[in-house]
Image 1 (tube, rainbow, N blue to C red):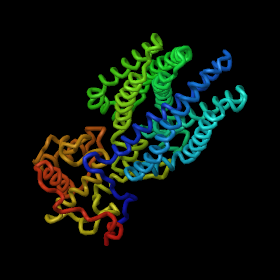
Image 2 (image 1 turned 135 degrees about the horizontal axis):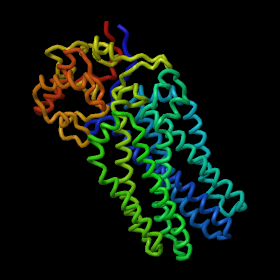
Image 3 (image 1 turned 30 degrees about the vertical axis):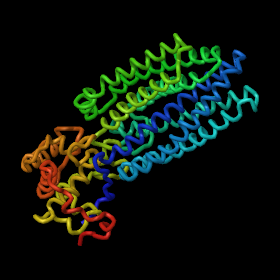
Image 4 (image 1 turned 90 degrees about the vertical axis):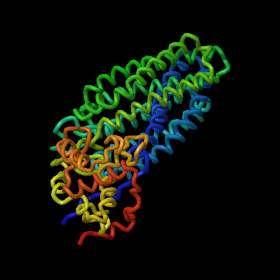
Length: 467
């Protein structure tokens, strides 16, 4: 029997798997959006300084640039590789699918990122050391390279939501994958958001400027940019919602908007009010207030947006053909990829997964709890925590604490198997495996010690191939 190309399951208790990447990603988005938006603020401010003959603005650019080096590029350079590590262990097949589609896009993004990093150092340290026109060209090059990194990454992120049409499935073309249905709406939304973040951070930096004339000039220049960027982001976000697949719309209306809609409106109102106030009273842009509002907008604004984007593409992790639990859910002729759903329905995960220990290949009365635990981790833990009361998508809580094994099994064999909830993977397993999962979940809800029969370590599982 041929095994599937699966990998060991990575699970973090109480959080689940995907949210390790999600938490790191939120921090990275704050840093990266600030850096890209700030690069254009620098370019626009320096253009103003060059045309108006106001070199004192360069002092503010240098101060903001030093802050950017410490805040965005240090944090961004740590969280960027952190995302790669997290997604590699959490969704190895998803990452593999993206690399096979976008290897040269990612290579180009790394080139632009290298230009961006060199550019910000050169921009900061060459102020006053080269002529104004040369430095202005350098600053605009830095800005365009920064935005190019965003453009390329957004094309990949948009494909993770869905290709938007059947073309890519038939051709396997990078162009069909990259220029998908919601690419431009997504890019426009993030472009507007980057100006908001850059303006909000810019107000923090401006609050430390002692020259009242320079502070007034800078604040009144960057506040309108943030306002226009925010309005543009909201308009494009509304357009972005029109480009989503059906499963995303269902998830959005059922779970996400009821939780996050008010918070998102509040962030928009507070950010708008803050930028208007700053433009009206630039002398009252005090550091404690600027820092507090930055933290509120960064946390209350970015976390819901990123969680919504990550959640809306469920049950898929990439291209609507790889489930979050790493199972290939449909054929992709253009890439020579075949669905694994029928194989799994016939033989089960225990027989086909290469990292299942030999003693757990068949469900028995003695190992039912252990096999149920392992199957639940494989099938569910990419999206769900497996403990009661866990803060993020607790699976036992989602099933309302059910302890009736037949009821849980009926749910797995009914609504999930037949796809009546489009944001959940189809669970079509042999009856013994369904019963084992139901037994494990019921045991968790009964408060039993589900570690009493621990799953053997995956470190030795590779050697335990089926005979």
